[in-house]
Image (tube, rainbow, N blue to C red; front, side, top):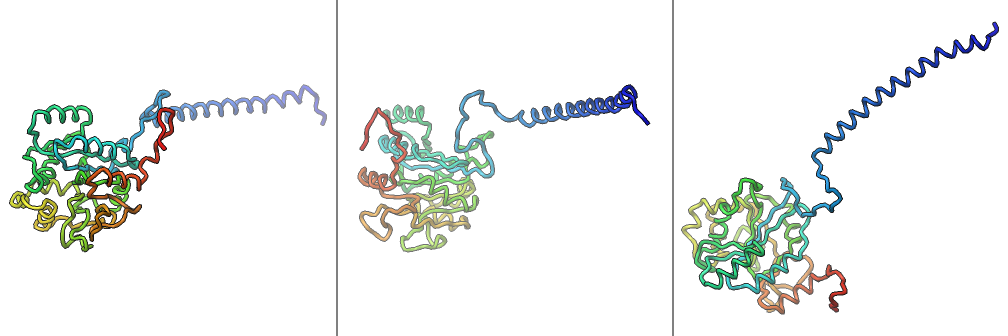
Amino acid sequence: MRYTPRSQGKKLLVPSFFFILAICVLAFINEIRFDSLLSFGRCALSNVPMNNGEPPLLSSSSSSSDDEIRILIGILTLPDQYPRRHFLRMIYGTQAVPEGVKIDVKFVFCNLTKEDQKVLVALEIMRYDDIIILNCNENMNKGKTYTYFSSLPDLFNETNSPNPPYQYIMKADDDTYIRLESLVASLRPLPREDLYYGYVIPCQSMDPFVHYMSGMGYLVSWDIAVWLKDSDIPKKHLEGPEDKVFGDWMKEGRRGKNRFNAKWSIYNFPEPPTKCTHELWPDTIAVHLLKNQEKWIRTLNYFNVTSNLKPSKLYHIP
């Protein structure tokens, strides 16, 4: 049979119609899918903050979570130690803090007793906001440490803060140099409850359950501070070498079931040499007995703390 051009055109018209109809249907379906995708995208991104061209805010702990490590370091000192506090602010203010970690360094002393202290300490607080003034008479071994730890649950009880506000609380001397990154690394695998951490005394002992942690710098979990606040045990025994007395409380109260001996990453400055000292070495968390500037400078030089100094035309330091 022979096909004429007209009959062929009629036959082509029908498939073309269905082809165009299929394209329209597909386009309609895709439009619905695209609109749905946009709606999903807007929903998914609605809680993502936009920086509007500004650089993002950088923080070691942008939000609180169960994975965040929060540490309070209380440096027990005296009100008149202004130069020492300013020096330690440089020491700790220039140290890098790992991501997901919050470390607050506070200077702790008892009630002010002089007129100049009321002015100068107030100015420090206005400028730095890093001072805790305890309601006590200044002392070393007559309850100051107890007042520090037992006051914390009431000092940091804001309803909008994490619970607990800190997992770990440290007491340190003002002649102790703490390397924050090393401290955090040592805490990561440890429990966050009923923890007692430090340098075991006496020097030759390595068993944290026999004696107590040296006052150069020891750390407990937050629940220990709450227990100290509520327990009658420490109230009956406040006087004596503060670190030994603290160990007595822990023993009598059967607290600190989780203990960590940080020896020999925490140690005394190597000079003069004793059973409690050794040379400076990289695996260091803290160095104690930095009683003068020479010892501080030797320690800081060893750990190369100025290595991140940026070059500038404004200064030249050989």
